[in-house]
Image 1: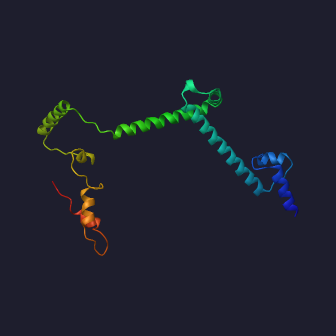
Image 2: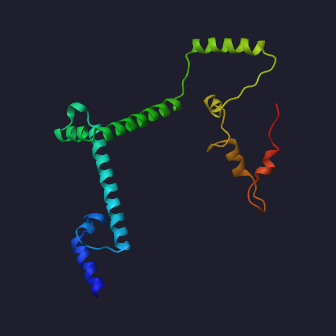
Image 3: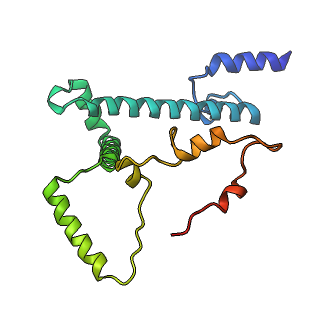
Length: 183
């Protein structure tokens, strides 16, 4: 009964958004190790949540064009200049990575004259070579309207759909391994 009264007294004195364990001890409220750990975790969770909310507010202020920012947003950014600078750098890095990804996906097609010049250069290099190895990615064939291999309409996909199923399922990768053509 005494423990229950002590616990009620602690809960009234130290609400969940209340002081840290060290502050509780200063208030003359002795805590058990378990209670102190619980309050410490709650304090850390509050601090993490406050930091997350602050970052959200700073990001919102940074997304607003400088000339349209409210006085509160300007004050927030100046008060937390170091965090705002760090978040601005992260935002710019993310935007640059997104732009680079978009540029990498874009397919570039040369006009006919540039293509003729490149083909002439390539022809000269191939004719002057003793041996030639061409190493390309998967997109080279699909860009030339040659069907892909494993895509939804690819040759492998269509062959797999038509292959009879044996006692162990579909055609194994081991049986396909020997079917690589040599040039």
